[in-house]
Image 1 (cartoon, rainbow, N blue to C red):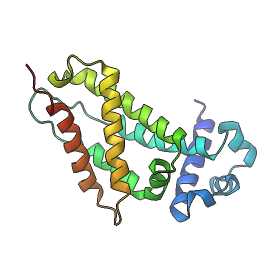
Image 2: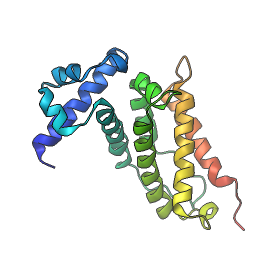
Image 3: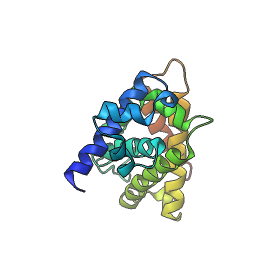
Image 4: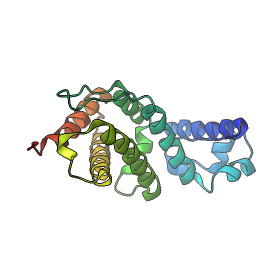
Amino acid sequence: MDPRVARTRASLQKALLDLARERPLDEVAVGDVTARAGVNRSSFYQHYADKETLLAEALENALHDVSTQLPEVPIASGTPTMPSELITYLEHIAANAAVYRRVLGEHGSTVVTARLRQRVELIVRDAVGAAHSPAHTDLPVDVVASGIAGSALGVITAWIARDPLPPPDVAADWLWRMLLGIGAWRQPD
């Protein structure tokens, strides 16, 4: 990607998330985003069809940034240790809780949720393929990835719906225990 394009997109994504921390996302207009990002309106529409597409890419990129840092988690050597990147990602969600509540909530964005789910599924496919978990040996990888992605987003949705919001390390523990439990439900033969 052209560095100028990458800078413009990153600037627009940051502007949207910054504004969404200041006021409800529904009150943030494209003009607000472009003004905060320091770009003109036509630049916005060169990169994004609408605010929802921008939001989807911003949240997807946050997950991507953390997932590229994930270490390989050895499943075969006993109970794996929770990667610190999980807490890092949940800290990002906590900092943008209002956005995630809107996106993942009851009247949320199907577009943004679907893109997040797809990104989680890709991460899980890579992890499951590398881990060789005995609990998943006879299951298609896409089924495992879909199940784990749905569970992960379910835990995150339940966490951000709480008031007051529990700390990210608490949510990370909930999520990690849930994910470990998925593999433990079926004992190897």
